[in-house]
Amino acid sequence: MDSDKKKMIIVGLDNAGKSTILLTMKRQLGPHNFQELQPTKGLQTEEFETDEMVYHVFDFGGQKNYREKYLERPIYFASTDILIFVIDIQDDKRFDLALKYLDDILALINDLGEKPDCSIFFHKFDPEISDLEEYQKRSRNLRQKIRQIFKKYSFSLKIYHTSIYTVFEKIQVM
Ligand SMILES: Nc1nc2c(ncn2[C@@H]2O[C@H](COP(=O)(O)OP(=O)(O)OP(=O)(O)O)[C@@H](O)[C@H]2O)c(=O)[nH]1
Ligand SMILES: [Mg+2]
Image 1 (spheres, helix red, strand yellow):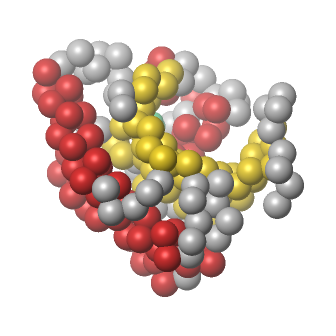
Image 2: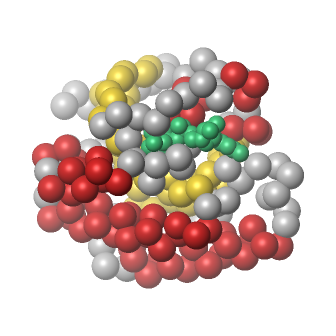
């Protein structure tokens, strides 16, 4: 792959907000018209460009049957430069499931010998909840569990609070 073209994969459970994030990053969408998105069917790829870089983006539809397929086919994760893993901060009942999926994917990428830069988005961290102690606590607990998971590997790790209601703001918290 060209040095000025990077493979970025965006992964997480269904409904986490991955496709919405991509659209918002591409500035095709304001918060008022994002509702029309359907769940992503399998793997969708596209390219997007910034001034310095071309990104080949793989949006990994997160429904259960797709997740199982990806884990059976490590080839999807080959040559990954950037991994973005999205966790819906409002979906606390599925944190454990999301973390298990994250761990499975990291193990697989590690076995492939890849070393992507990893970013985790605690997404839907919307302005009206971002200051609530409950959500700050969720963030702290998740960070601690993620730190544990990453100890097993030698990937770089950044964690952000994200929300499309802030015109896509990324606040790094680790
Ligand atoms: N409150 C809130 N809702 C969001 C945000 N981002 C996305 N959503 C909503 O979350 C739902 C799921 O968004 P998608 O982008 O389709 O989720 P996905 O991760 O691509 O889902 P799959 O394609 O099934 O894997 C949609 O109803 C979005 O409008 C956010 O920052 N805050
Ligand atoms: Mg999607």
